[in-house]
Image 1 (cartoon, rainbow, N blue to C red):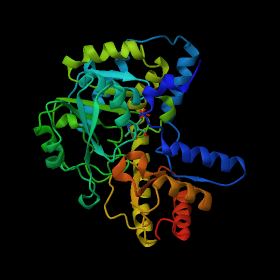
Image 2 (image 1 turned 135 degrees about the horizontal axis):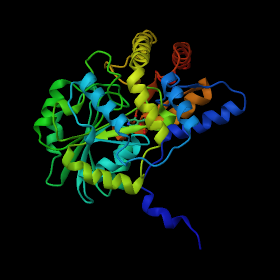
Image 3 (image 1 turned 90 degrees about the vertical axis):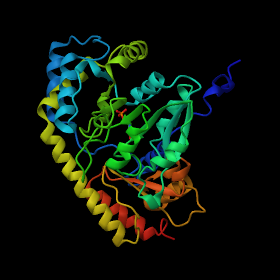
Image 4 (image 1 turned 120 degrees about the vertical axis):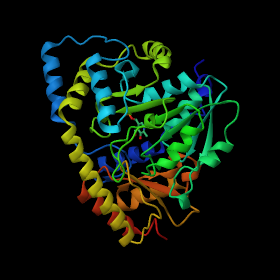
Amino acid sequence: MISNSQTSHLDSIDSFLAMEIFSRAQQLEAQGREVIHLEFGEPDFSAPESAAESIRKSMEINDAGYTFSQGLEGLRNEIAKKYLRDYGVDILPEQVLVSNGSSLLLYLSVCLLAPPGSEVILTDPAYACYANAIRLAGAKPVFVKLHHEDGFQLNVSELKKQVTKKTKAILINSPMNPTGVVFSEEVMQSLAELDIPVISDEIYADLSFEDQPHSFLSYSPQTVAINGFSKSFAMTGWRLGYMITPEEWMPAADRLHQNLMISATEFVQEAGAAVLQKSTAYCEQMKAEFNRRRLFVLERMSELGMELGYTPTGAFYVLYKYRDSGKSSLDLCHEVLEKTGVAIAPGRDFGSAAEGYIRISYAQSMENIERALTKLAESKLLTS
Ligand SMILES: Cc1ncc(COP(=O)(O)O)c(C=O)c1O
């Protein structure tokens, strides 16, 4: 007999609540309602032209095959150059492993550093997938709370209290999803001093608007840095990401990758190399536009009586604490969608510390952001 008890060992793996909002939004759109989407972190730009041009060339030759599991040498060279140019970090192409998106690499990095039964410390709130990736790897997520009154900066003294003999890694993300906060130099420095390996999700590293972009590798070599093309190059659907490890850890990482993925798609890797060679200016233009929107969101929310109470300086998100804390963030997001046609993400997606909050993504046109914020303010759903 087939029953869902067969898959009950995966019951603790949550789905994205933002997806639930998105599905409902799609139903409303199918009925002819207009919806403004602020629930996802997906840039509203096209991928750089150099990526499309590279794919066209690859398709003419039409010889895509498996590649070396760590990825094409040309792309790994470009990634090493980027880390030196943009973050001042000297790495070897041999330290780079490329995959189809960074998501798999989050899981792979936990498998690499944290054996089943060990502990990985991460923030609450944090990107929704982290805790699930840790659980899937058989390790235990241990949370350290980020406090609104600290501007959502990480308190390393509090983190230190969570360190046990079982701690094998700390997982951070700066600039951060869902707060948009960039961890300060002091935070990074004190994290490095703990002498515990850090998995540093650097997918938003290039979207740091007030500070020089940085990699955790400039603070400690005991780092697995994860980065990709989805956000700063507007290439979410291309599925291209990479990780950087110390050379000593790469053989194990490569074995895992061979077994899970064999290799990333060849022509997408070629496109990634072309983008790194030719499209850094395009990336800068997008960054400037995201910053323009960020400043607009901060000013407009404040004018509309929706003060954030902290200053996000990176990625393309703001986390907003709504007034009626009796309502669950998921229920509120549903109500907001039905009554205003604006789709936003429930804080609950990002951990229990973000319940009572909603996340707004400003990876949307200025016009849509302006209309959405006005609708949210007029509805008074978040402010009363
Ligand atoms: C913090 C963070 N890490 C990783 C990812 C996934 O990136 P990719 O498209 O490379 O799998 C996302 C996507 O939203 C993210 O917000």
